Length: 141
Image (cartoon, rainbow, N blue to C red; front, top):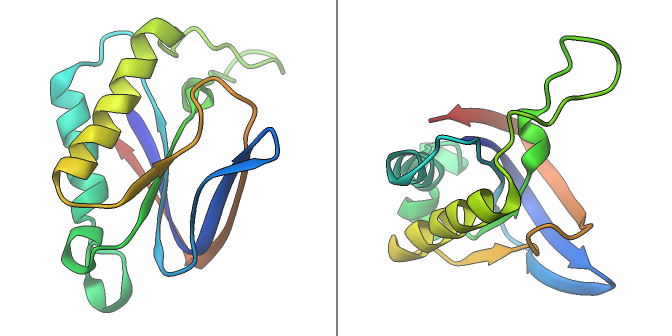
């Protein structure tokens, strides 16, 4: 699994004109992608890292301060652009594999007591955020 985590001052996800998740205080936006052989171990690692990264004000984590998190499924994190100009998506897990893994990350974050909003798996989404810092971290599990 991969996650790109951005510290944000505010963020929202909109699908078909409806806001599915938002926050207006410092929080995290996590773009999460899965590959073919990911499972429970990768889910736990990604969720733990997102929750415990000490990247908020005063070196606090989302868990420390109860910061909101928005998780957005993002198969494009597994794009391969080494050959040609058209990305290959072969590294990304297909929807039936990836969707439950991304949902498991959301569930694991909620089990840690965090408020977690999401986009809609497989939908075209408008993701807006004000990157705070900027602070962007890549996590691989």
